[in-house]
Length: 159
Image (cartoon, rainbow, N blue to C red; front, side, top):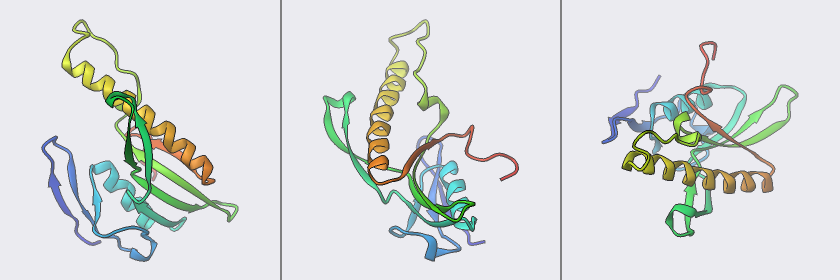
């Protein structure tokens, strides 16, 4: 397996460049950048899985309205797009976002309900919901499915 350049970001996450073993399956710009160890795992899965016909990283850009920034229009770079051959031989296309499960649920207020940390978590949740609403609509329009994958469902021990 080829070695990947790996860096640690200011937030403690692992980022780096992914070098596909099967570059003909990759449909996107090089270098291929991963922004977390989870994205790196999904890239490895896409690269090695024989049912994945094509895949790309941050290749699809979807405009969305950000309610946390005065309803300005921003661009959402969906983490992955992939075409997978199903068991019946048909192809299914997906848009896939990789996120921590904590960003997928409404944050709970603590005793310090107005803390900056709570406000940041709430803003992230609201922004993600807006992005995913627009991504789902774009996926349906293109005959694709939109998925959000978290650490809880990224990979089981058998995958």
